[in-house]
Amino acid sequence: MKITRREFLQISGTAAAGTLFMGGLGFDLSAAQTYAETLRIKGARETTTICCYCSVGCGIIVHTQEGRVINTEGDPEHPINEGALCSKGASLSQVVNNPSRLQKPLYRAPKSAEWQEVDWEWALDRIARHVKDARDRTFKTHTTVNERQFVVNRAEGIAHVGSAALDNEECYLVQKLVRSWGLVHVEHQARL
Ligand code: SF4
Image (cartoon, rainbow, N blue to C red; front, side):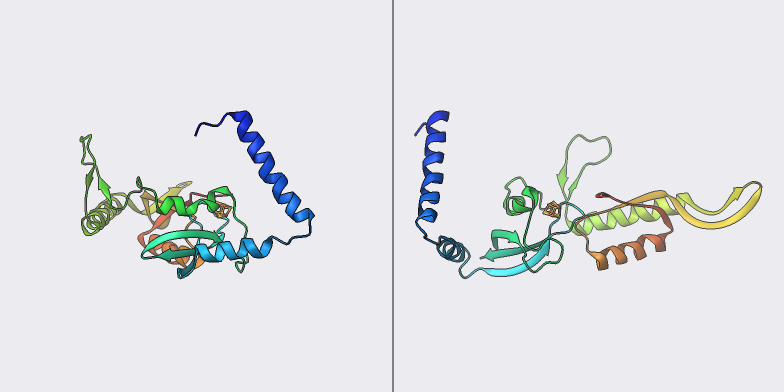
């Protein structure tokens, strides 16, 4: 059915007026709304997670059924957001259920224009090899300032960019790892 902009506004206005009318008559619609919500997630498994988008780190409740995310919503018990979410966080389930979502690592060989799917073992081995080679190539033991020599022991050829999806404990472990390699260029993608 094709609806003109004017008809759409009329329908929206009627629906809004209906809700106001019911409320105006003294009906409490919150119980019906809560019941409808409960039906939607009935029998689903409930877990919690952190929003992956920014460093605010809002808590989210995730409902899954048969291995599929069917609902996400703000976690009212989370101290950061107390149940509230911005529009990005509120649409998080669309990230999981998106048919365009990448689920395997892709590799583009030097001078190639094509991406190819590779397995995680291969990708992780290759990353480790590159990290080791770059570290060996660029590791600096000393630096000279005003003709004085200082011991620095740092890997200047690698940088690490963190993620807003990491919690405190994960950030701690990542810091330990990259500092143990001698990295000094350590940053975060969601600096506020
Ligand atoms: S993107 Fe929005 S919902 Fe997600 S952590 Fe940031 S403020 Fe919270």
